Image (cartoon, rainbow, N blue to C red; front, side, top):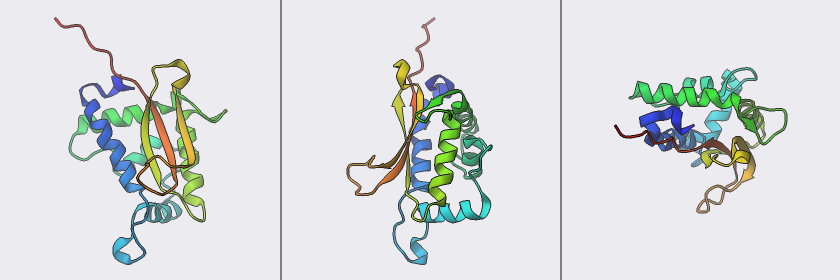
Length: 163
């Protein structure tokens, strides 16, 4: 997937961070603290941002999780996310895109939705070329909080020969 982002592969971390901040744990209980996963669950209930049959990339675009200042990087990121339907997932019968969308729908409908964390894993090994979703995961050792972790398969882009 690194080949898709081309010269914008350094933006991948920013795009992951945008998702992670939007779906972060709630920071408190007052009106000023409202946001994160509680806000996303409310938005999902009202607007069905994640819906069976709607690609994950479209939901990310609606939420503005693809950057606002660099159209090339944004469009390449959307291409990368749109390609997730060509990947297997850790759940038999679901491609990578379906796996993420179904996990988001289920989590956001839960009585106590978990915050979500997106990362990437090295997919250079043949058996690692799939989308992985972990429920009740602890992706951040410094945060005592369970998450739904989404891990995207990525590998470095190939270096081109110098002229």
